[in-house]
Image 1 (cartoon, one colour):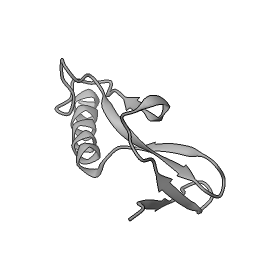
Image 2 (spheres, one colour):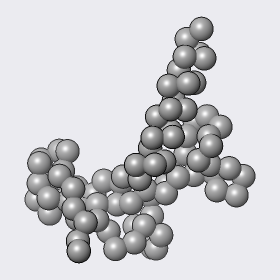
Image 3 (cartoon, helix red, strand yellow):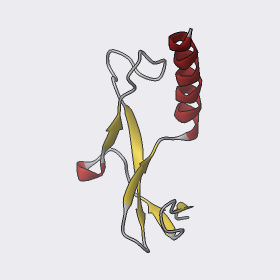
Image 4 (cartoon, helix red, strand yellow):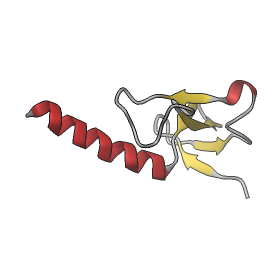
Length: 83
């Protein structure tokens, strides 16, 4: 089965890349704080690229579990800085 998403830019159909770990389809993101999802041996988070078949944009998406952890860490850091 082909994994798809709705494009946030044009509303078209986005198709997931076959792999996120080979060649030019690798996308990385590194949090600007010390994170539970990253470490010494893995200092970044890999994102899966999707291609919109309507407008042609390629966007990278982080999986739900990592995104949830990052959201919690961000909220925690935001309150620490705010106080």
